[in-house]
Length: 215
Image (cartoon, rainbow, N blue to C red; front, side, top):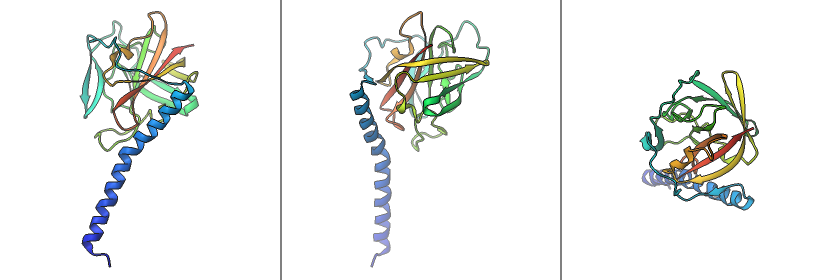
């Protein structure tokens, strides 16, 4: 016969196992994904970049206990729009709103203040969460939950002021959360886009960076 105390202990054990699975499963899944990506040559594992120097106006700060890249950079010309949309057709990501010049990750996708606008030379730097998590209060959406499924040559579409800009994925890499070198474009002439999210999904151990070039 199961007593109340045994039933209570069993309940606590069940809850403990459930929480443990919630923490371990994303890590295991991510490690398996990373092995597969490395095997196929899809992804580049980058240690902390030697070019990761202090960038004036950009820093790593905690936002709701989540380390984020924050920017106080100002653009010379004010953006003619407050948001644009992002789509990745191959991942069935359609018309997600991207807030221009925002540091608030609770606002779905955000565009790093001072980074290039769609179609401009430079790097359109966009950040977003990859998983819902009980550990981050205020997090209501996971717009980049599918981003680990992206592959080279897939297309990323931005729609700004009724103008469409298409970028093709050129590089996928994993970096340290404090690596600020990912903000800079690969060169001074091209038009690039970078998508950043945390990995493993729901944790903030590393950052997944997807780099695309406008076609």
